[in-house]
Length: 246
Image (cartoon, rainbow, N blue to C red; front, side, top):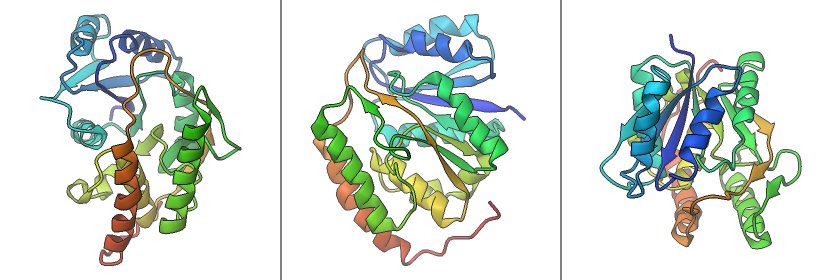
């Protein structure tokens, strides 16, 4: 069985993608990378393809027809990983807001603490966000409070996008019933993981906003999360979740 696969969705990340690839491969812990590119017009995919002969069997690319949203990118990556027997599947941004060296800490939480989902948490030990405007920090923190209130999950950073799943979580969740596509996708995946009874561990990280490239955040993303979470909770009343041995 392959061990560790890092999923990195990209859209116009030419300033970051080569640095990110080289940084992950410089770590002592071995990781493979799958870049999931949504037909970036800036040539992100071409940069990855140029690098692939340098990292044979370690660097992979999944090219999609167009920009279809973060959730669909990750779902495509999950399917790709499950078809190839990876044991630990990571989610990470390409913009260095997540530190590559923290991948090892997420893996340790899964291996040593027996977590089925490890979350790189901005809020488990205070508020650890750098370079965000105060308004965005407050909005993000309040969003997590809102999600905890609605769902009753005991997770401090419910919208976090830096995570490590054991493959058994992804084998258990029915991807066809994932409704939220933007940042709400991150909430829904955590909610389904929690409802199935898997062990979740939050690992404190420092989140540093991107220096290169353009943020994909928008008001519509927050609206989806706001109303989508409420609908998700109501739908859950009519679904039976098979409890697993975490």
